[in-house]
Length: 382
Ligand SMILES: Nc1ncnc2c1ncn2[C@@H]1O[C@H](COP(=O)(O)OP(=O)(O)O)[C@@H](O)[C@H]1O
Ligand SMILES: [Mg+2]
Image (cartoon, rainbow, N blue to C red; front, side):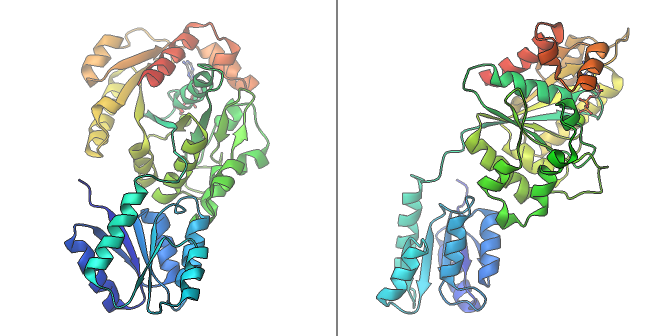
């Protein structure tokens, strides 16, 4: 079993070491913070199973830390055990008001510490946090320009049509050069800049369910989109793993499906995103280059721990050409199940972009829309 992580915050290094040792002997993994600010930061970043807080710390006391943790959705339900040298009733009251779950007075006796930690963790198996039920699906291109964003958008729209109440959020997890706003018929810069880059610019602690909700744009189709910046990649803010994790987590609470439009790269934010996906849909072009790139992407995904069973391929045939490799051949060459083959529709794709209206809405009965529905089915069946 995975070792559960406990965060210990205390400005007294000896106390940290002592308590850390006691817990490590019981098989827990430990992370430490030497002051209150660090405690908040670590908790947000590492999402420990339990937090042990000292009351008296120089910068921010344990009550203030607990209050902050309780106000942040990412940490609101992590159990907090507070250390206090004093056992006054007023201290305990202050702690309870700040959302502390239990107390321990110093000096700490190992058996009492372990017993309280275990009780709190036990209770946590019935969490009070809202369930993050949404399914996360990543669309990962083997290379840029083959129609991955187009597919992600149309799939998100069609996922919503499965049942009357199905909801979907689309996240353009790009680092610039974003196109989805235009694909969706939005061209007001303020609408665009309100999205992902604005969240990346906030301190992590301000990334809340509310700020994430506010960053979403509603498309006519009903899909909510969190859009990236159209500015050149490399010029805008980029989120690290903690940002990606927090954003996806909040969206999973509100939406049945969270569709990620990923770039063809495997940097830290993409790795984090992929680790959260229950399915990864790899887009492949049916030619030598496409197959070679697909194979190296599949190998890289496996080394990241994304299992082959979680990865599906979609063939995208963007330009009509004779001599493209057949679907079954590609399937054999990449040894991955192919769930759909998107045919070339240059005129439709062009008209879709010019009008800012997704393909599936322009021609819902076309061959390409039928193939998009195959992708939707494969996602829903899983
Ligand atoms: N099946 C298709 N046939 C022809 N053109 C397509 C098809 N799918 C997408 N396109 C066009 O290809 C271009 C790139 O699409 P986009 O989805 O932005 O690619 P990517 O996300 O892979 O970079 C767009 O102009 C889009 O309209
Ligand atoms: Mg794209």
